[in-house]
Length: 348
Image (cartoon, rainbow, N blue to C red; front, side, top):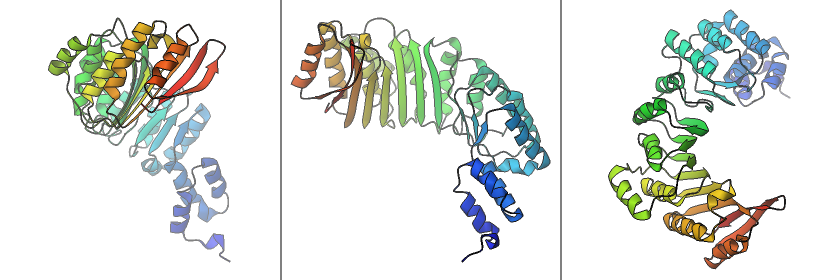
C-alpha cells in the first residue's frame, strides 16, 4: 500500500490540478506540511472568487507575503455583491506578474471598469492575456470602451446587455474598431435599435465571429424586401466565419433576411422570440407575411429551431395550422396561466 505522505511533490501537484474546489484544497493543505505548498499552488490556479471584503483581504495578505504567487492566478470571478474594487487594484500593486486569462462575474460595472483602467495605467501588460470579461449591463461609456481596447488583441468573447438602451455616440464611434479584435470569436449583445442599419454599424467591424447571440428590439415597421435587398447589396459587409446564431426577443423578417445575407455560412440558428406581440400573432395577415419571409430566409441553414410565446387568442389555431400544413413539428413546451403557450417549431 502506498504511503500518501511519501508521494513526490510533482505527483501531488498533478493530482491537485484536478481538484476544482478550493475548500477541498484547503483541507489538503492541512494533511501535512509536504502537502501545503502544492495544494496552495493549486488553489491560486483555480478560479479566484471575489465575494467578500474579508476573503479579498486574506488573498491580499498571501500575495503581500509571497508576490510570486500572483503568476499562478489566471481566472478571477466577481460575485454580484462584491464592490470593493480598490482591493483588486491593491492586489495588482503587490503582485505584478499575474497571468490573467479571464475576468468573469455577474456584471461589469463602471466602477469596476475605472479600477481596471487604473491597473492598466500602472501595468500596461496586466491584461495582455485576458480572453473573457464579465457581462456589461450599463450605458456604454468611455471607461468600458477603453477596457475593451486594452484587451483587443486577446479578447475572444464580449457580452453586452443593453436591452432597453439605444446605441449612443460612444459605441457608434467605438464599433468600427472591432476590426482590430483579431481573436473576437463570440459576441453576445442585447440592445435597442432605431433602424436595421444600426445593427450593421455595430457588427461591421466584427469580422472574425464564429458564434453570436443577438437580442434586438427595433422601432418601426419591417423594411420591404426590395428596399432591404438594395440596401444590403451596397452597405452590408458579409462575414463567412459565423456558424452559430441565436436570436432573442424580437423576430422580424427584415432582420432575419439581413442576418442570413450577412452570415451566409450559418450552420445553426436558434430563434427565441420571448414576447408574443413581436410575432405579430394578433393579426394573421401580419403573422403570415412576417413568418413567410423568415422561413424563406433560413431555409438553407442545416439546423434551425424556433420557440416563441403564442397567445391564446382567436388566431392561435390558425397559427398552429400554418406550421403543420408546412410540414413542421409543433410542440407545446409549457403554458403560462390560461392565456399563453410557449411553443417550439422543429423540422424547419
